[in-house]
Each structure stands twice: as C-alpha cells, then as structure tokens.
Image (cartoon, rainbow, N blue to C red; front, side, top):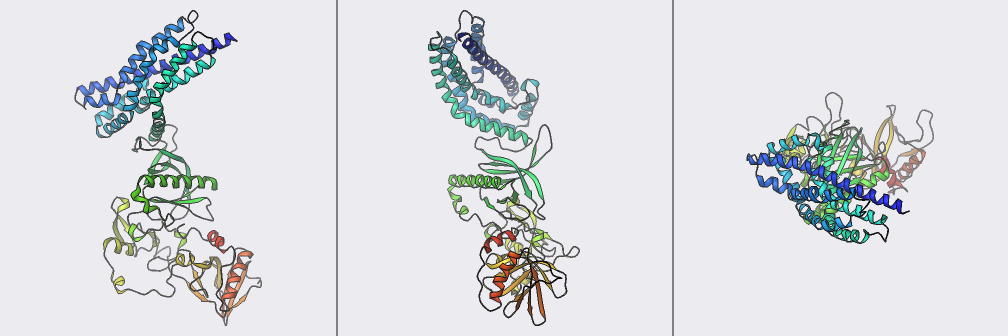
Length: 565
C-alpha cells in the first residue's frame, strides 16, 4: 500500500515539475516578445513605457521560476530515494508566489494597452504578428500567452492538494506540505478573482480568431452570453439560411459560417447593439419555432431548431436586455412595450424595420395599385419596411440606423424624414371604403383567416377574409394579410347561407347567395368551415356575432406572421 502511495505522490510531483517546465517555455516566449519589442522601443518606434506596462513584472516571475523553484524541485527529484519530500522547498519559496498579485492586478490594463497599440500603431502590430508566426509561439497570440501566469498559482494549489490527499498522515513531509498549501492558497486568492475574467477573455480571443481577427471584441467589459447555429428567414420569400449568433452582454453578432478547416470560421454580417433591442416570438405555418430580434441597426426573423431552443434563445435575449437596462437606467422607458416591433414615427430612420414579405401583399402598400411581374414590381422601403411599387419608392433619404447613408424610401417616409410633402398629400385625399389595411382589421376582428374564394364562374383564388369588430356585418376580402386595400366587400345582411356539398366544389365549401349574386368559399378543414359558418349565420340575420370558441388560436395559426408579433 505504501509503495502504491509513494508512486502516486511521485507522479504528482512529476506533474508539478512538468507544469513548471511548461511555464519556463512560456517565459521564453515572453522573452521573445519582450526583447523584440524593447529593441524596437529603443529605436523610438513606440514608447518604452508601453512595453513595460504591458508585460508588468513578468521578468521577475520568470527569474523566480527558472533560477529558484524549478532547479530546487529538479534536484529533489534526483534525491527522492533518500529525501522523499518537497514541503520544505515549497514552504521556503512559496512566499515569492505573491508576486503574481502584481501581474494579475495589471492584467486588465495590459490587455487594454495592448489592444490600443495594435489598433493605432501599424509597426507595433506588424512586430506582434511576426513573432506570433514563429514556431516557438505555437500559433497562439500574445494575449493567449499572457493568460497563462494568471492561471498558474491556482494550478499549483490544485496539484499540492492532490499531493496531500495521497500522502500518508504520518509522512515526514505532511506538516511542511500543509503549511505550504496555506501559503499557496493565500497567494491563489489574488488570482482566483481574475480567473473568471481570463476564462472569458480566452473565449473572446477564440471568437476573435474565428471571426478572422477583424472584429473589435477582445475587451474585459464584453461577456459572451450564448452562441449557436440558427436559421435566418429571408425578408422577401421566407427561405431559410444557415447563420451563427454570438450574443454578448452589449451586442449581437449575426454571422455567416465559412466552410474552412483552419483560420476564419465566420464572417460578421451585422452587429446589433443591445441598446434598444426588442425580442418576441413569431408564428409561421411553414417555418415553426421562429422569433424576431429587432434592433436599431437591423431586424432579423430567426428559426430555432426546436421550441425548446427557441425559448432558450428568447430567454437569453430577454435576460441580457433586462440586465443591460438595469445598468443603463436612462433606457428603461424603451423596454416598457417590447411587442411593438413596427417602427413608430419617432423611431423612423433610427431603427431598422421589419420588412413585410413579398407574399404578404398583392398591391402597393402606398398607392394600392396591384403588383405584376412586368410594369409594377415589388420594392421595399428601407425606413418602414413596407412593400411598394417603383413609383412610390422613387425617393431617397439618409437613415440614421445605416450610418446616415442614403437609402431608398417610400413617399410617406420621405415626407416625414425630409419634410417634403407631395401635392397629393397637401390636398388631404380621403380614403375610400376599401382602403383599410388588412392588418389593422385582423388585429381587431371577430374572425379572420385564409379561404378559397370563387365568384360566379371565375377560377378559385386564395383570399384573406376578415369580419372586423367595428363592422361585424361586413366580410372584407383581401389578396394578402398585409394589403392596405380590400379587393371587395360583402355586406352579409340578407344573404342566404348554403353549406350542402356540390360535386364541382372543393371539400369544406359553403356559399353565400342573394338574388343573382353567389359567392363560394372553401376552408382548409370542416372544423374551420363550421367556425366561419357560426359567425356568418348570425351576421346575415343582423345579429352582431361573437368570436367562436378557440378563434384566437385559429387566427394565430392561419395568419403568417403579419401583425409584427
């Protein structure tokens, strides 16, 4: 038994020695950095104080290990048969480990200073990159190497604890080893508070390298909250694209993966600040598990891999926003209504809008003219996100969220942003009876959803049907959920309702007839058909219908993310 413990103890001492040897290698690397930078500083390429403030007392730490601690341990390993103890060596030398406190205390300042000079001094950056490319550096950056001393003392503490666990209680080295552990533990407290910071910085450095060393993220104030793959729904046609998110305590990096085995793994497409960010779940029949992130710089509709993954992302965003607002009291008022995703007039041009998708409208959302593939094509206003025709988008204005660059905007947004008012707007044109937005009605409706529709002998077409609360006896027919003008209306009072099957009609169909006018409808299911009939049968008699049971959930599943949720 004692022989087994002896082997285990010696194994731990071997690890301690190897750890010190690894530390020596690190110090040799620092000598390479340090000596080269000092040489350049003497040429007045940059100030000498910059080099000394970055490396702090690293020379003293290197001298202590290379000339005292490591030689004594190596000598004792050679004498282990006659003198099986290390506690006396550690007890004598461990007080010097407190010199790590100075290095740890200076670490944040060193990282800031290093970053500043990498950014501002091309010669400084060139020297650092040249040294990092050397084989002795192991393809690691200077920041990576500078993390090592901060973690060194806690590692010594762990090794000594393991040594004591395997050391017999009556062993001659126990008393000295226990006293050494007390001293090392005291020294480790200077480092332990910085360990969490260094682990975070280490992760930031890894991300920095994955982003091609182009993004300015290596900063002690940045904290990674969550990362992972996600699908991005295209603003125009809802096609899904593979993307990667890095959520920090103060920003979101929206990235495109690069298929590379080494080097850069992602390209940053957009950086969105947490300040002013709003996050909410969305509902889409074709793409489940979706949610929307709206920031001043851009609005994204994203699809998670599962409902659980979606909730995890939303929770991470909401908690990050909440903590950010707590630390920035002046922004609390912006968090009161996180579900108001559409851009308000006060935010126009300051916040990236959510684009209305092409398939959610059939006509220009400004002039109400129907789109076609040749003469009236779809365009997006970069200020409000509306789908408009070429004529209505033939305006340009600077947008604050895009760095005040000139963007294509619609005529209404141009009037607000520039103060220029068209002659038509000066005349104050009144809206026609059909010029009421579908989305405006859908949010306050007794019943709404897609139905197939046929009038007389015309082909069947898919329409968005709404019976609004304010006009409960009228059925509005729109081409799409975001259309700003209805195709037609049907005053329901006095119509006859027929729901008997006809051979020529699709399943789950019904008809409304009055004199020679016949309107045929078909629902997606028999259950949905009966819900519509329950409302319509009351309306045709002049009674104000109420929403059928579970109608709210029907609206949500039928409507393809049209109300900004």
